[in-house]
Length: 231
Image (cartoon, rainbow, N blue to C red; front, top):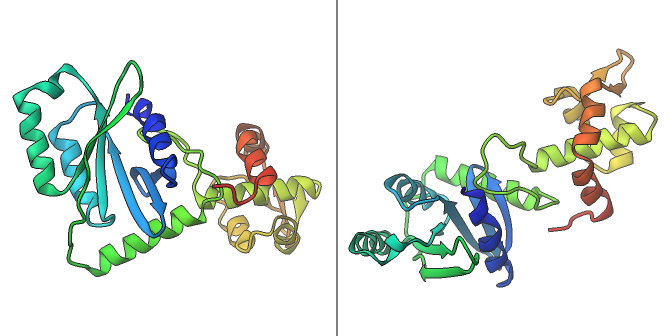
C-alpha cells in the first residue's frame, strides 16, 4: 500500500533537514527546507497515472519525485524506458525495498520552468500557507478516507479544548483568549465538524460530536498542547 512508502521516505528527507508532512492540498508528501519545496507522489507501481500526477504537481512545486516499491521489474528494459521518460520530464524517482524499507534515490528531479497563471499562483500560496500553518506533522500520505489533521482542524481542536477547560460553554472571546486561536469566532460560527452548539446568548457549548472528538483526537490534542508549534 502507498502508506507503507510514506514513513521510510519521510525519514530519508527528515535526515537531510526537511520538514515533511502527508496529504497537503492533495499532495501525498510535501516538504520544505531553506526555501526549497519538494513533493513526492506515492504509488505501489510505476504506472502512467502516477507519472501524470507528478507532472501536474510540477505546476505547483519545483521539485517532484515519484516514490514506489523496488521490484524485479526495476531491472527490466521497460523500467529503463520509464526511467528515461521521467528524466525527460524532470521527475525524480525513489525506490523503497518492501523487505528492508531501504530508500534508493534512482534519479533526482530537475526544476521545471512553468508559466505562472493566476490559478497556479493562488494554489501555490495556499499550499505554502496550509503547510506552514500546521502545528503538527501527523498525517500519513497515500491513505484514503482518512481524517486529515489540517491547520484548520488543529485550530478547531484547540477551540474545542478551550471550551472543555472553560466548563463546556463560553463566549467566542473567552475561547479565543483561552486557546490563543485568532479565528476562534469564525470556527465557532462556521462549525464545520458539528462540534459546537450556539446557546442563543452569545456563547457556544460543546455538542455530543464535540465530546466524541475530544476522545477521538486525544493524541493530536496532546501534541498541540504539550508541544505547541512542533514541526
